[in-house]
Image 1 (spheres, one colour):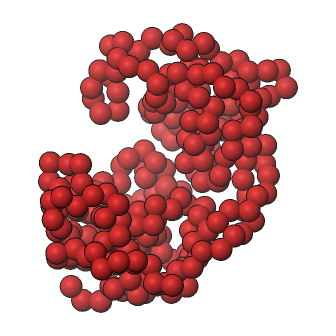
Image 2 (spheres, rainbow, N blue to C red):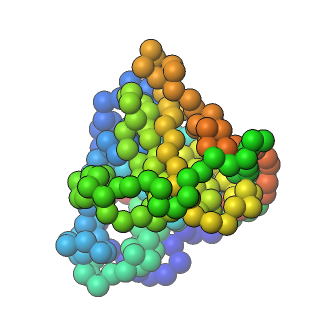
Length: 264
């Protein structure tokens, strides 16, 4: 099946090969990506430049994931896609919606990279978020005060109902602060962190406050990170745990994709 579904296309699109950013290995690159140190896209729907989208540095894999709204575990394709990086700039009508932008990206991939895909069910590694043996150790909603704190965008944090992410005490570590967060929302965040589907099986229906600090699994142990727990152990500190499981998940299988796009 060809990825694009309609004739929605960009007015113009430039695709250029992008040299790799300086990372010593794949694990360091993944950590930089999670920490937001990779060059980010700009423009597009909902911004002050809605008629132009820029991806100054994006891997072919991430471009496909963006176009198809696919999570890491939902995409099955060749390993080399993560190493092929591009700088992309495209123009479109300023009234283009986010959904239309994704279709434009799909058609760009089909036209320039000859992308073809199909969907199927596959059994994959997954997790269930459950209550640990000694019971939950979560704060009641409102127990953590954030007035005057500075959020990741540099603005004061004065509201709840969110899960904040900040740098931890050592390089390669992170602190999550949950403010009136449901377990379903935590499971979604864990899906992003573990790159595996995580289902809320705690049975906890309220909103909770909590703080956990852990080292990223892609980081090599150092004297600074060696004493920090991994995500699984950090969850144990608030009375939760991840149970490994296998479950069928619908995935997108890449049947064909070119390393080099056709000319601009």
